[in-house]
Image (cartoon, rainbow, N blue to C red):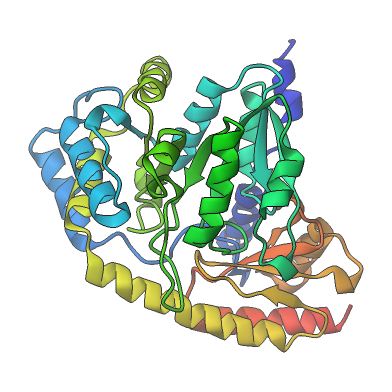
Length: 388
């Protein structure tokens, strides 16, 4: 059997692989601490679940339009207006089976063979693989903890070429939790306008922000920037709805039309029941619950930060948002995969190696779990690291 050559260029998701192994060990009876999860540990809000149950009981179990039902798009339209000061028509919105699906669709629509997409380091593991699957070429921009893991104007300009098609920005960021200020975004947007580069803004963590900071969408900088931007978001992180698989995007009407066409011939519509639940969540906002969860995340971040600072040779980068630490472990003389595998096998603590995020000197540690688990994990990591 001959397989598609493009699949030889794509690596399996390291985050899913490590998490699956940890869960399998736990299922076999091992006492495993999982600090690898890319999802909130909070349950989906009860009223959202009730909305889904009502949808089932009312027979809302049929096909919807491929790009999502109108009432959900209208709720998303209001959300963009209220939260991000962005005006979109429903014809400029597509609902997909998760924000990951939205991103995959975008790259499939925009990339021709050899087109370059600028990706800022450290990056979510799936960005470069999605670009490669679409025939594009990921072009990486290096950042550093000393610079807040944020790319400046010169960094981005150095990556621009005659084949540059798009730039991906993720704020707050997975894996490091960096947040771009409005002024940061203004400078990046200026380059993209001057160089005719499409902006793909992944804002899935916009509701998980600490220390009183605010999220800014790059599309809100100006009408000109909005016209060059595709905004991607979803309900997975904000509303603890990872398994419901609802994401959405908004952008230029022609782009959205092409994404809708692609989706109509691939997955068709997102789950009708999940759409009903997402519509309820987005319409209601559930502000109090979101703020309570964010406060808990900040408490956990602070506990984990204190614990990591007590570990010799560990150098954690303090996240401003999302629910991950990107921690420098280069002082131990191990690459990130070896470090993560040995930590899981020998100390029964699961973290994610940094290599798939673009930096083999780091590991990603999730604090999407309770404080007691975090403290227990820190104790194990400290004891294990001390034995190296």
